[in-house]
Length: 394
Image (cartoon, rainbow, N blue to C red; front, side):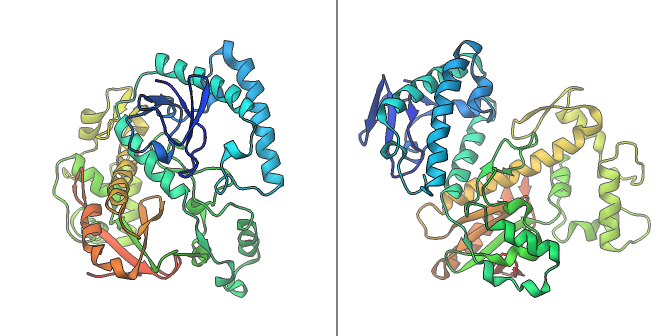
């Protein structure tokens, strides 16, 4: 049965179904809705938002419903504006305690009809299950407040521009909200007005502190290069991949950083012949995953792309989805623990760890290292704030 979750707050249980608002005890036959809410977690529910690849309701609304949708949306946005002016947070209050129930019935009835249209006219994505897991992981991250200490940065050491950037950060909500459909390749973007963790300058990272005791940060050494090797069925060097390339791929031994720059300049330029090695067979990747129009990654993400960008999209998308997949696994592992995923920054997953749960770190590292493509060498760092993470050798 199609229904609508009234609020996405875990403690604000309520749905619109069969023309009525139902609270606390939810009907057992609920099956399809627009978006996820935490109190739906143990129910077998499908989400039209994922069918629509994250497009907003107005974009998927059929023309004959648009007048009704514009009408209720305009009124709902007026309520939200009022709450904003009054400094009423919907993270701390239930929407059904603030908005008249008569209007909520009208609003969710229109949304119900649009949801029904999406399920009837949109195809279920091949990677729906993966998207669903990622969607729920970032939902939980959204409902965790960041511990931000603006006084922790020595402003005397900052440039004038960086001081201005630090001041501007104070206007953002202290929550990290991701759009999992923000890029075609699967890399996250931050939702407007949420804390811009993805674009936070390194000089200002010290303002981010753990809610628990310290941060544990995990990323892969040479993630995209290791992804390429895995897709080609080649063995992974156990030590630094760029140092290995410097010694084994180039005719003359280069400095690691120079080798890294030359490698990527060659990798993503189809016309470059700077590297001549059977190990890195770019054409084979195209033969395996691209059909001259559509790229299908190992995570069943489908991308329409031309030849010049096909390899780039394949590696970046597969790498991004690998990180998301590992984040989902770690998130599931931590469900009954006090430690939690704090946020993710590109290829890095940052975990907020308690001192008494340090014993789980080796297991977490194993979960991160062993992914769908094989075992990748992981870089592990730890620290008391996000700006001072030190290499952790276990």
